[in-house]
Length: 388
Image (cartoon, rainbow, N blue to C red; front, side, top):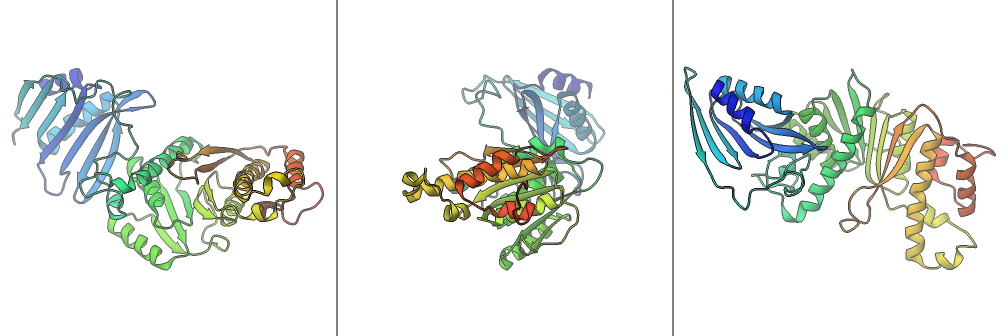
């Protein structure tokens, strides 16, 4: 294997375009492995896609670990390796007795081959294009060979964007124990499956994920899918956000497009659980639109569309301020480009040790607008002088 090791050390860099390990030694083991270089936060890594029976797994490796892993797979799992670089094509055959035969063929760089991972390749999504992922196929985002269905490309981008937010908050999650994650109003559960797949299958975290929704047929279908994939710590429950009492400890709460005050009830539950992370994409913020009253803004609020949009933005700003008052650092971020959906705001809140002293500013704004937000009542009870 020394010749193969030397070759890998020389060519395993960003100029390598693909490695495929195939012709498995065991029927019950790995069937195939595909490897491609990826840049993660400016560092060169390699993403390996492992095919085992009907399941697909992802693992990321640094250069030295990738070399060691390829050599191990070559000895134990596969009889053949195909490797393409910008300059050459390598074929490796390994006999039953371990004899290695290598054939190297030089090739002229194609104009289609990217010169730079960072600048010329397509965006490297967390869930890659052209790599079939069972739940994305079953939910109609991918074809069986991994191509993104054109009409669902926005959904594919949305899922990956949300996983980027998850990736950012991983350091804030507790360590050394099972993590509980709840997705309120999970619907068809694109994100629920994606979060489980990313954290459990790709990253190896010990997690329990619960999807909650009011539609019985949706819950039944999602439970059938998670059984099909063998996702033992993923479950879907029929229930209402406001009355759900199925757990005592929650580490992360997710809400995607929970309508109007359903978002407030979900955030209220998360705060009561002292959830470390809250990720909320609000929808249909009608409450303040019906309450808001201000003489100064009367000429503006006479236009229904303007009033509706301002009310939605103000709703989420007040929610963020209330979260700060409960000991969270809160950000309002763009979830997806406005051209793809107008419901593109995400509230990301992470539990900290100190509550913000923002009482006066919040109350001044609330009274100026003449509103009584549901989330304030959920977090603080009936309003009393000086509360917050």
